[in-house]
Length: 360
Image (cartoon, rainbow, N blue to C red; front, side, top):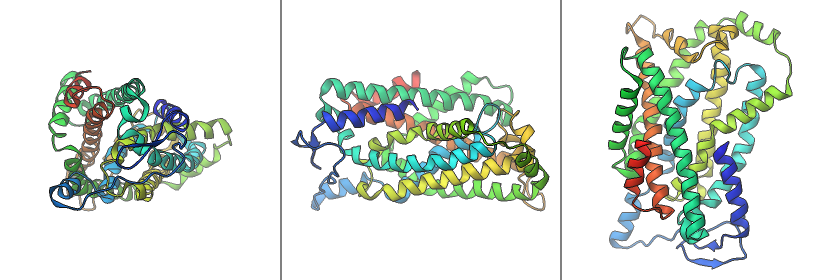
């Protein structure tokens, strides 16, 4: 919610104060706002310049799979359970939230030229303040992911290891993994994103036979329409997608970013479908009463997601490995964005900000 509010303020500010920016970064005039479509940067098709541009941009498929890697585990782990989004009203709110998110993506795509050079678009002071605003969000999101890692690893994988050591090694691993820049992260997502998505869908399919229709009937019988709960589900889902507000910093590294809207919307619909599917699967397998009491209800769900024939004694470790990989990829992406935001906002050497973000 923090970053969504900030993006709305930036949009309003851009329509009034930011000059229209051509694709090459030069100012065109001060009368046009962000509501007008802007051309993509022209790419010179000669020699080393063209090769450099191609090698430092990611494809739409890589963009889609990065979204899956960055959002899937935080959603599956943290959207349900005690004090979170549970029940039919929350499910209705989740479905409704996909509509404003679609319009939000369109706004963010049109804001991309402004974010490619914040100092030139809004001036030195506004550009740096905007960069600091987003770096604060990166710190908050990264701290949340580290807290989740610190709680899950001792319970599910390595007992007796302190939360401080877990977060230290997680940050260290993620810092070494961002050296390849956006192209490196794109290749990593292209290879592993489909595997993670397929693995999570397989896990959900394997859990379906464990579901009991009686549990769903009990949840439906106890359901009472509540506009407040629906709004809570809508608001909570939009907040969960708040990291989409970093999209303008990413799209400058995407081929033909002006046409990337369908790709981003496909990612949001995929994640939204999984969210809603899990909102039904969890109470069907565990019972609604247990779901609302568990801190991470997906963990007991993983215990029963075995392949027929008992192929592995601890198949839940494989599912947990998928989720931890997704959390680490999300953390690495935030560290990468901190460097990119610092460079585009003129805050100094981006690598220094990466180290500062990781230390904080």
